[in-house]
Image (cartoon, rainbow, N blue to C red):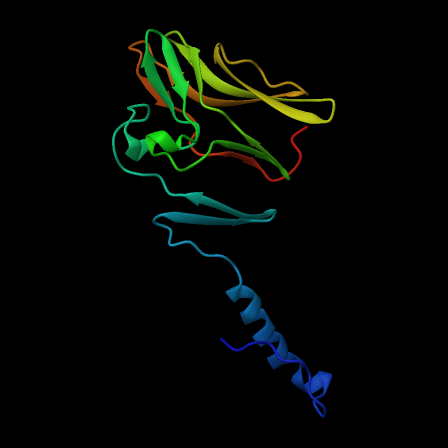
Length: 177
């Protein structure tokens, strides 16, 4: 890869602009992040680059298997309770559940709540008084509203198994409200 060079004395804009621009374009393209598309995925869009970890093979979501745990994984914790997992060094989880709204980053704590069969588990994000807040809830999924944003995390099936609906951190590159 050749690095772009400045115009030198004696070079003319008309004659030398083409090769200089081609080197510059090649250099800028080399700066674009790339993933191996097996473990790290990079998606280029008009609003920026998004990095994500590729899904892992293994047991079903909510099985409690460390190989399938990610931020916002929902697992059954018995007696009608479910747990939304987050960072926990004692249990060997090295990731953290985050809600990223533009430049605002909110760390989500591990939460255990009651969830009946046939209900959803979601994170509810609100904006009031210039601040974002979140709450993990279970029940009938509410409609979106002007100051309320709902991200469904999982569905509790009639046999109490859990169908994961969201994987990974919740990231919105711009303003939400």
